[in-house]
Amino acid sequence: MERGSTQKQIPKDFSVEMPLEGNEKTAVGKKEPKTGNPKLDNAWKLSTNGASSFDGSGARLMLISPDGKEYDYALRFEFETMNNKEEYEALLAGLRIVQEMEIISLAIFADSQLLVNQIKGLFEARQSTIKQYLQKVKEIMKGFDSYTSKHI
Picture 1 (cartoon, rainbow, N blue to C red):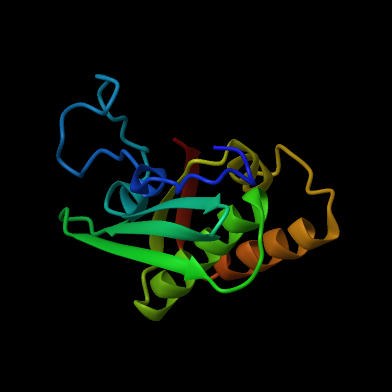
Picture 2: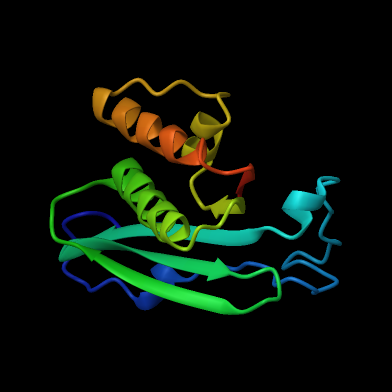
């Protein structure tokens, strides 16, 4: 939906499809690969999705334990933000929760290809604000024994 539209954005913008631990198939019918890293095979999973509409912005987070228990979070941002910033705000909110829970092995799933590739160092962050977000994400991620990030 374009900015400035007078229609309300429907809740599906906060929906994220993510295979649960133990499922034999992913949403597209392929087997979910193991990472080859025992720490990550039993990692917590964090799925993020930022969204905006004419009446505000927010994010949906889903944290899934290694045994498949789901924890859902919905956030509404009280400040003006736009696409890439929302994605970083969503990820940072999730990482702060993960930090508080003292989780040390994490698999991140984000719907922003740009964000994931910036985290992996494949894309450069050019805007100063995005550089600051990326720096903060990398700083937090130093506290994990292992992590991975994937675009979904």
